[in-house]
Image (cartoon, rainbow, N blue to C red; front, side, top):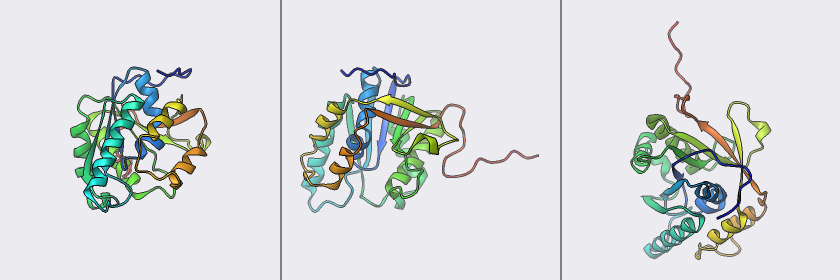
Length: 220
């Protein structure tokens, strides 16, 4: 168990919702480990089996096995992968995706996603974030988003800073046996070795309007 000088927010059960298997480790691994160390029960829901279509069913089986090993190394309980094809989340409605998230988030009091509010965000990440927001709004759940964007760029959302155990995250990443050593994903992650992670509070208990549409105005 790692040592974290900056405590994470209190949460009994957290559901991590990611678009792709590698999101859970390269992007969210430090945060998952910190919450698990604090005693939070963490489960992972992955909406697809990868960033691109697999040439054989065997690759999907291997990737699911590797993700399960990786999240358990981080301290999470398990990982469930849904059958949406990579790059096709836009074909499902936000309500359909949100229903799948709600089904997996029974008893969860916090959700965690990749921040996709900035320019250039991957379409699957945008879809996942919006669906998670819809699910959080329906269930009264807090929604956190891991972000690399500088905190000073944000004025409307609270930003939390927590400590990350990078050694533990590296051990989890090593579980992805099918990811080539020269994959650009590895080099991009190596450039992000700050000991701290930032979480944007996209939704707390007082927020009611979904992130993908403006709040309705009260009649005057």
